[in-house]
Length: 123
Image (tube, rainbow, N blue to C red; front, side, top):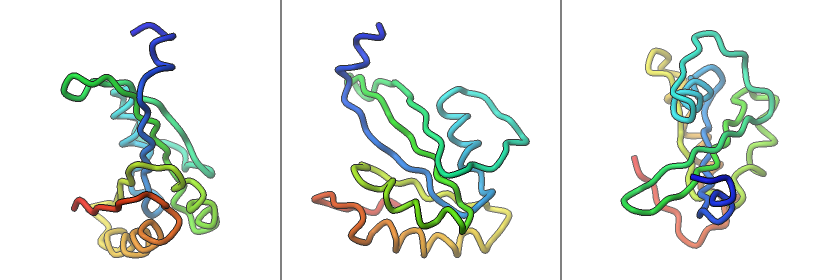
């Protein structure tokens, strides 16, 4: 796909959210660049990557935001939800408390910070 073609692609904004050190950055790197780095530094604030893909016969690009899970950055997260078409809740299967922490992330996401006409949960 030529660079000028990417300007006209429909763009979907997705967010990865979850507690600190659950693998959000690893998932983002694996999905966007097909790489794995076992020792990534913690995300400070937010990271952002774009992935172009074709779904069915529709070319599109995903703008994927990797939010920091540390409590000190938690106040910034609601501003990233604005305009998002999807939120992916991430937890670490080896740390049960990170699954329990999804409740607060879900409450935050399903609040009034994401003004989309229709909110659906896909679990």
